[in-house]
Length: 253
Image 1 (cartoon, rainbow, N blue to C red):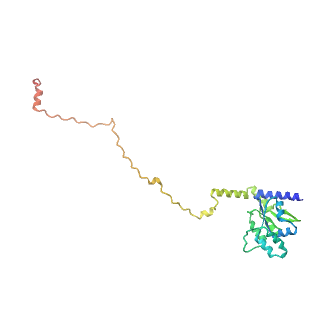
Image 2 (spheres, rainbow, N blue to C red):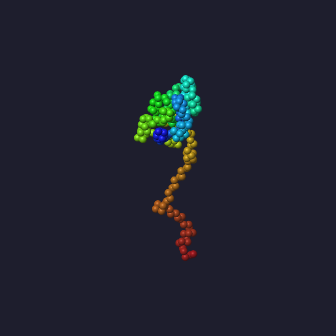
Image 3 (cartoon, one colour):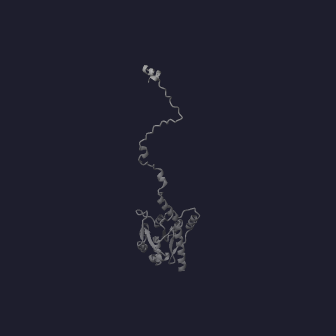
């Protein structure tokens, strides 16, 4: 019977590890009802839980669960002493304590992001927890601790993820890391309301250069085909008397 129970626990733990990213050490939230049942059945929680879950565990509770035991009868004093040995997780009700069942539900939220196991004997709390996907439940039956099988809500959630209708927690974390690397972690809605301020930029260096003077257009050189100006012949002076005598009598020379 013990071997069969161990195989069942191993199968259930692997389901939560693969589909909901549960990792060691397992965080187990315990209330007063579970401690009272363990005390009545002489179960050592610290010794038997790590063996049953086959891994390291962190036993924890909330301030509301302790306050609830303090307000009840003296018969639960032993359960209170056991619960005080565990780590106390901070809840939203430090100033105004609420019933332990309400406090544990608030710790899980809608998706159990911190991957808590819940150890309780409260039937109403168990019914409410089965409506949240990815919540392993522990309780005591016949002097033994039992890890409940995955709820219908958890199975439907996994089926929806496999069909592509939902995004698994591992995919959500990978998407978030990619957004942070690309600088897209902020919401776009926050950006829409803000106007971008223009940065003061230096003037364009090309506009600061002096304008170059345009060169004057050169006159085209004259080609050989163009007409040259006519040179007028010089007019001869009338010859004097001496020159006239020489030219008329050349023999005298």
